Image (cartoon, rainbow, N blue to C red):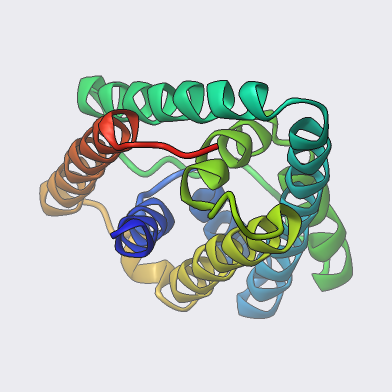
Length: 205
């Protein structure tokens, strides 16, 4: 059950429009498909840095106190509920592109790494999300790396798809806005339900 819950949550989070997708699409618009793909690789690498940091930090936490790790899992479940509520309360779910200028693929790669690596929200999310799905009886760090890497791969695949469909994503009109709102609402309901399920499920630490 936990594996299914993880895959559902990871897929939902990957396809939900957000700053990452907006950034790579903006890069594509400014510098073309090659620059957009380079930025996808960069954000993927930045995401992996967060995964490694979370695995190291959480492993050290467990070594110090299993009870503290258990509390983190409950706080993580509460954080997922918070994300779901915030998605449901969003009044504007439109797809807004940041302003960027063409700078070449190499710089797009480096900037993508920095943009994602310095994203505090990504760090908080991995710390809250990954511990929900680990098996306490198995070594912690490898599980966190595998689960986090799956999330990063899914996010990167969606970013790459967004690059190839950039012109379609940029098309204006009420239908596009309605789809964005519907997707955000559906994601909010999923995250809310997942957080509640994880908070109420029997836990072993």
